[in-house]
Amino acid sequence: MRNIVEIVPGGMPVIVGLILACLLLSMIPIRPQMWLYPLVREVVVMKIEYQTRSMLTKETPHFIIRYTDSDVDIVDMVAEASEAAYRPVTAAFNYEPSGKTLILVYSDRQAMKQAYGWSGDASAMGFYWGGIIQILSPKAWMRNNPSVDEFIRTGPLAHEFTHLVFDHLTRGNYSRWFTEGLAQYMEYRVNGYEWVTADNRLTGKLYTPEELDQNFDGLSNQSLAYRQSLAAVRYIAEVQGDAKLNQVLLYLKAGERTDRAIEKTLGMDYATFMSLVNLWAQGNMQQYSKAAN
Ligand SMILES: [Zn+2]
Image (cartoon, rainbow, N blue to C red):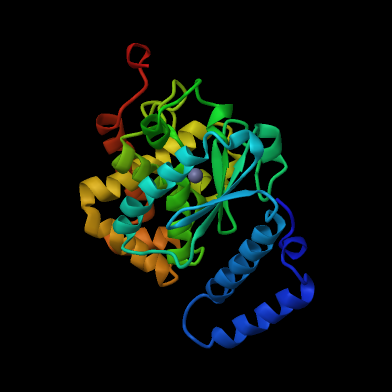
């Protein structure tokens, strides 16, 4: 990921201006970085929109899709999947981000690798960063002539759009594992999709809460880290109820840390919460089996 100073047009003077604006706004009782963050994100979006202006463009009611010649034949499918994600995700959060969302479509992994903010997960079909959704062309990872329904169900748009809406709603105030849990929870609820592999059974050795909190992207078994994240969010929503999940989001929006938001909502300490999640997940979540996959 490039340094934010290199990405923001105007570089350091603009950043200093934003920081000063932030300090003034920080008179209001909320974490100061939560005021600065949306401003920086908007500037990043404007810059990337400008830099990608020569790409082909397709606009839908809620998205601006930028793509290249090689994806002319699948851009309608991307447009349909994006709009299919819009209503259920914004309804679940009761929040619609302002303006249209920019989606960049890369024809292959190499092009995506050189893109803004991509952190290098070789298996990723897309990612959300800095207010923008970036996806790999379905032609690079799906069989020939995939159906729109299949792309909606297994593609990355519901997942990435959830990251975006949650990021806007909370002004960037969340831990990595929580946003990944939430994005997978929306994929699961809207499309019935779960990322289940032989490596992410929840019946074996699991990551500790500290590992998930402090080093999510550095954990060697990413499929397990993601699966545990989904388990935690599903536990809140399905065992404690949707109202509790909404309460956690409200605390995050108000500036609480993720662990505190969960503790305050559920009335239990964080370690107890994670133990209950693991117990529940062993008995209630699908585990990989050779026969089923
Ligand atoms: Zn994600």
